[in-house]
Length: 267
Image (cartoon, rainbow, N blue to C red):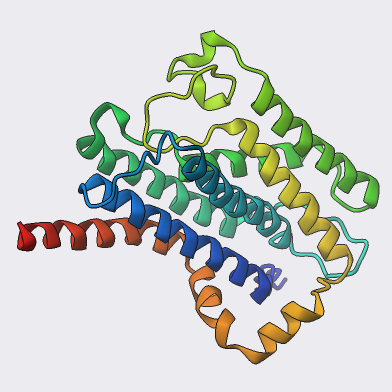
């Protein structure tokens, strides 16, 4: 008996790559400013100024919303059909998840000597690894995303997670052992912190948007379609958006290393 062929890899949507690439460009710019501040060439309160905090939150929101969309797009059903949409825990998922988890561990190990007690122990990569596990486990016990009602329920769950994470806080959760859940009354002392709540809500809203978009056969606005057809301005973001994990892991060592060498030269 012939073996069943493995599921084909879902096609990439350039508009998603472009959106992810634009978020990557913002992330690199933000971290460049952070590094300039670290070396004393720029004096800003990035961890206290509401404007910098808002920009950082906007960047994280873009990334995690796209994580939700991508989880649905990897579900492997045809666009515009009534077939169920659900994240699959197949070999491809586990390979990708292992890469994210390994990179999260590397970030923690690398930032420990750099920042001491403020090292990154639950940043965005730690969150993505945890969130994708939670979503896949939940998918085993919940109905597939196949109709408008299910999509609406998913969006409602996302909105609820956002509201709970933003407005429900308890002082006993301030310890590092529990603050990652999202109920902490005070943000822990760390250079990057992305707790489960409220950020899981952004992922769920992204999944709802992705499922709705898939049901409508990936309709793209005429403006985006023309921009894609003309190439040019969207080419760089599209390229960057295909390599988010690689760029995330590489850009800070490169920026930090270049600025460190410049400081030695100009000292």
